[in-house]
Image (cartoon, rainbow, N blue to C red):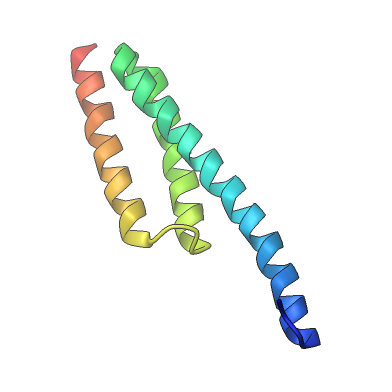
Amino acid sequence: MPNTESSKKRLRQNAKQRVHNRAIKSNMRSTIRSVREAAESGDGEKAQAAFRLAVKKLDRAASKNVIHRNAAARTKSRLSKLVKAAGAKA
């Protein structure tokens, strides 16, 4: 347990930030899932729209250091590949 005032405050800040980061990460994962589902169903337009939103969420999470920037780039690349394949099917 923290003893000093500053360490107590830091504990409160960390708890608040953890909740915020979890919300961002959860929302990001949901949008990624929607891209994958749209791509698997073969709906190219829906996959493309979901992909644009997912890229926005990934970039935002990376800029806020919720995830590493290389992890965001890797995920965007993989999703792009899926969306292109779904567009080719349609």
